[in-house]
Amino acid sequence: MRFALILVVAACSSNNNAVDIPDAGSGSNQLMFTSFTSRTASLTDADSSEMQIAMTDGMGTIGCSLSSDQHNSLGAAGHEIIMALQPPNGVPCPVGTFAVPSNCPTDTGFLGYVPEKCAYYREWDASGASLGMLPATAGSVTVSGNEQSCTIQATFSFSGVQWTDSFTVTNLLAPKPWCKSS
Image 1 (cartoon, one colour):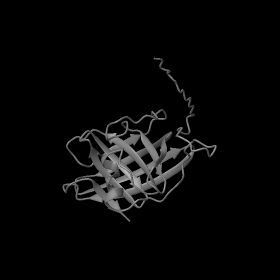
Image 2 (cartoon, one colour):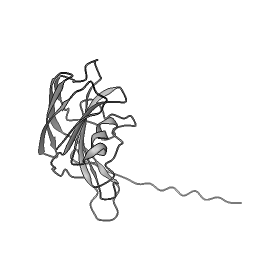
Image 3 (cartoon, rainbow, N blue to C red):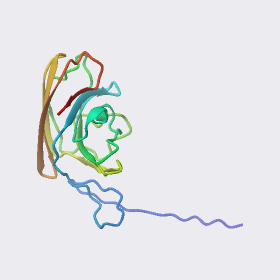
Image 4 (cartoon, rainbow, N blue to C red):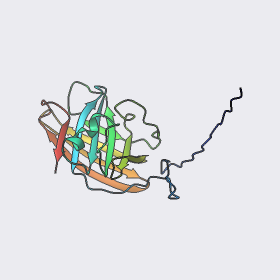
C-alpha cells in the first residue's frame, strides 16, 4: 500500500504599513486604514491583566465589549481601534501618557489584550468576518481623571493617516467595561 504526502506551501509578504490577509482573488491582500467616526468607546481591564481601550463605529453592548477581549467582533461591518495601556494598578483610571512604539508586532497573540502600548486598527465586513488588523506606526494616548470620571484623548497614525478621538467614561466603581456611546 502506498501513501502520498502532498505539501502545500504558501508565501506571504508584508510591509510596515499593512498586514497581509487571505485574499479571495480580488488582486489586493493588504488592509488599508479607513478613517471612521467613533460611536462607542470603552475602557476595561482585559483578562484582569491590562487596561485596554477600544473605539468603534459599532453601537451598544457589542461595541462596548470590544475592549474586554481583542478577539471580540462587532458581528457586522465596522471598524475599531484597540490599545492596551498598562497593567491595572488598583485605580480604574490609568492616568498617564502612553506613547505608541513604531515597531508593534503584527501577531497580537492569543490573550484578551493586545501587546502593551501597541494600538491596532481592525475592520470587519458585512458578515462580521475580520478583514485584518493593522498596527499603528505612531501615536499617543493621554488619560486623566479618577474613579468618578476618566478622560481618554487618543491620536494614532496608520499608514501615514492620522486619527484622533477623545472620550470620557464615568462611574468607574460600577461593573466594567466602562463605556461612552454617542
